[in-house]
Image (cartoon, rainbow, N blue to C red; front, top):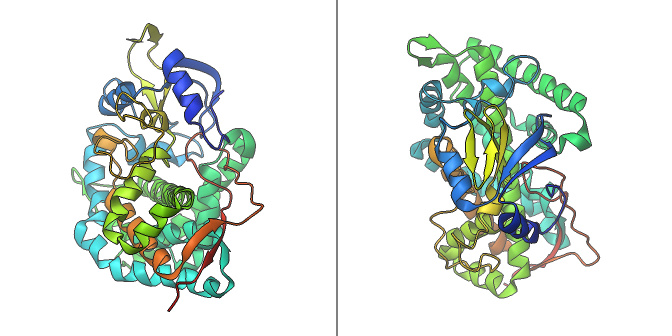
Length: 389
């Protein structure tokens, strides 16, 4: 059974990669409720499937009913995907992102400042969850006061459907849609400098995007831009806590933060897996995947494949991570990767400037949030010292 709560899934990934690298799991439940899918575990197979959209289609979601995600660019193949992606990418231009740098430092300071005197906090609820929600909300045009509600919605949509139930999933989708629909109406009347306004004004081949496409894009970006970055921040800190010498080094050598954070991305990929739909019969490693079958591409397992990363269970910030798949590969490579990297770097610059000797609070049992989509913790209580003056 696919590990949805196992804190260290690496041994299971290694076992499956060795014994069942292409495996059909009839009980596997995808995040949107579909059941039964092929699992791919090796680096080469996952990378190939991410690259070959003609064989492994991203159009796996229903395009009718309450689930709007089927209309988003993340669940669309070319040629339309390429055109809509070009529009959304404008919101993540280098110029736009660079303008957010000073604001990001300010947000990080504001989040941790009230908690510094106490010497402890739950890192997830106090910092890792609200920061990316504030960032992506600002880009899209969601009011700052609504960010906490956005966090609640996105956690529901990316959770384990067998735990939350599909009724709650669809109710969340309806609530989020109603909220964003109101913002779309407001931006149509009063344009602002945000993604919603850009999408309203945009045209693809002379056609405006439909409200459904705009809604789907915003919902997907809110989920993809918050839950994955929260996961990255949380698991990176936990890894730095487990390597105190590295934590001390990074506090005084911030130039090494990017490669340390990239290794955290490989070691505990925020995105566990991505679904695809086979468009034709495929024979892979002796198994036949029939056309129309759902396929789950296990990115987390691929990033721990010794064929691609020697000694994959060793946390080594100096390894060559140019091949990691944490941001995807091919035409669906993460639009917000540059922004996420900036968030993570600034976050740890601020954290290490104001906190030292960070540890997990004694007596804490770390529990994963059940999910086949995103690796995250329910909480990460920490204690720390303030730097001596």
